[in-house]
Every structure is written in structure tokens, then in C-alpha cells.
Length: 414
Image 1 (cartoon, rainbow, N blue to C red):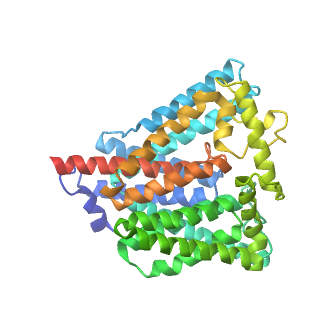
Image 2 (cartoon, rainbow, N blue to C red):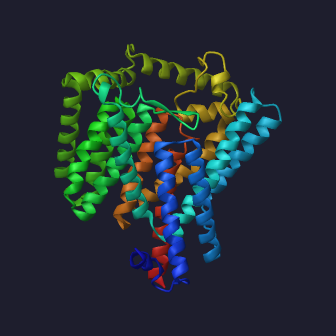
Image 3 (tube, helix red, strand yellow):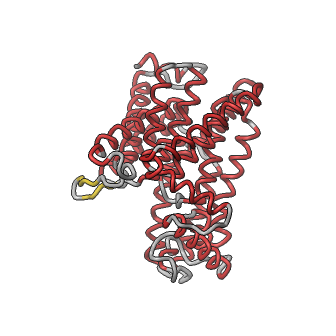
């Protein structure tokens, strides 16, 4: 293990001592613990302890190297925090307590993302971090499926799981399970193209089945769009052939979902509702119908307060919201803080997406990060993600990839 870690300190890196190697080793352990706690036990004391441990380890790394890496993403997030705080204390927010609580959450997430970013950049471990994420998610899917065995094919995977840890109830959301699994699925496609490891071909069907059993439209769209897009990007010289292969694979997958009874009852009828939205037909699926209605009402509220909004996490307090969030990240932010809020959150994301697209031919990893970032921006139309730490992690991976590529280019040009 020490020999493996020592590669990080080649090419003139300042610290090669045994103590520094051990510090890096424990930093990697702390990152693994963070991933494990975030995926399995989010928002519990276990997760909080893992964040504190990782903060301490990465803080020591920063002190050792006497540097703190920074990206403009953190500045935009800080501006969102400041805006929300000002709106909360100046009486703009219709529920200041809600807004201040959410502002605190965003501020904490900002610090966690900064810590993870510094860990990846200092240790130059983006690829290793991505594969660590996949390993944790694979364990998580096994955990979820085992707990769901009594009702495995009769409902959406994971929705009936409930247990307590130190007095806190743990429950899982089918969409969250599907999205982390879908992102892992795409990472494994990248790994297969790079290593040709045939064991990956055994893991991919397992992840695919997990996604289908969640009945999640978002998880299905991740692989339905992401898989052919990655195939095309990884083989640009064979666009026609790979395009046909991608279409055949996705069409077959769709056929399976629509024609296998238990898959149709879990997911197929939910996919039909997407067609209803696109064709403006009458919606019969309750979930999609409600989301569509909330989006329309959110747009009306945004138009009534374009520059200030109603405060973070206050869509749920507006008339006609049914006491819930909007299920649309764009609408949620526009209603929360008007145009400034959506600008602070999304402008940097679209800039990063554009840069990833421009640099996609410089590195295969950049292609993967481009696809993940693009898909998360698409999925934001159907989920509220701005305060969810696990979704922010994907964007930290993206900006880390750009920074590492930039640093590598500088090193080669010297």
C-alpha cells in the first residue's frame, strides 16, 4: 500500500516522508468512510463523524502542502449563501426559520465540497475516487436488495425499508437509489473501455436490474441516454456503427421494461407518463401529474417575484404547493431566490459543462464527466438537488477533472 501511495510523490513533489504517505493513506480511508456513510446512512451521526474525520485528514494535507485549492464554483455557492441569508434576515423570506436552516445546510455542503475537492486535487486521485464510489454503491445495491427480498418484485425497490440508528429512522428513496446506481453504471462503462476488465460485464447487469427495480424514471433516463452517448464519445471514428448499437441496446431495454409484466408494473407505466408530458396529453399517472402541476404553479410564483423570490425551502409554504417541494430544481431555486439564485447555482454549472465539452477529446475521463454533468442538469427538471450532498459530489468530480487536466497540461508545457 505504501509503495502504491508513493507514486503520488514522484516528479518533484515536496513531501516523500513516511509520515506524509501515512497521512495520505488515512485521507483515503476518511474519503471511503465519507462515501460509505453518505450513501448508506446520510444525515446520521455516522455521516457527521465521517465528515469530521475527513475534514481533519484533508486539513492536515493542506497544512502539509501549505496550499488550499479553490475553484470559482465555491465563490458562486458562497454568493448563493449570502443572498439567502440577506433575504432571510431582511424579511423577504416568508418563513425565515426555514430559509436560515437551508442556508446553513448549503454552507455546510460548501465546506464539505471544498474538502473533497482539495482531497482529490492534492492526492491526484480522481479516478481512484470514482472507482471507490462505484464499489460503495455496488455494496449498497446488494444491501438494499437483500433487505427488500420479501417484496422484491411487488413494488419499487427500497421504499419499504426502515430501521433506526441511534434513535434516527433510516429510510431510502427509490429515485436516490437509482441515480447513484445509474452514475456508477456510467463510470463502469468508462472503466471497461479503459481496462477491458471482463468482470465489469458481470457487474453492469446487476446495476441495471437494480435501477429497473426502483421504478425510477430518472435512473432509467440516466442509462437510456447516458449509455449510447458514452459509446459515441468513446468511439468517435465509428459514429454510425456505435450509434446503431446504442439505439438497438436502448430500444431492447425499453422493450423489456414495457413487455415484462413485473417491470411494467414497477417502471413501464411510469415511462408512459413521460410521453404524455411531451405530447401534452392528459396525464393518468398521479406522480407525473402532480409534478407537472407543481412546476406550472412554481413558474407563476416566480413571475410574481422575479428578483427576490420567497426564501429558500419555502415553495412548500406557498398556497397550492400541497406542503411539499416543487420536484424541479430550476423552479425551486427561482421561487426561492428569483433570478439571482438560479444564476448563482447554474451559471457555473453550464460554464463547466461547456468546458468539459470543449476538452472532451483531451481525456476519456473528461468525456465521462461531461456526460454525467449533462445528465444531472437534465434530471434537475424532475428533482430538487441543490441541497443534496451526494448530487453535489458529482459536480465536484467534474471540476476536479478540469483542474487536474489543467495542472497536467501546465506540467507538460514546462
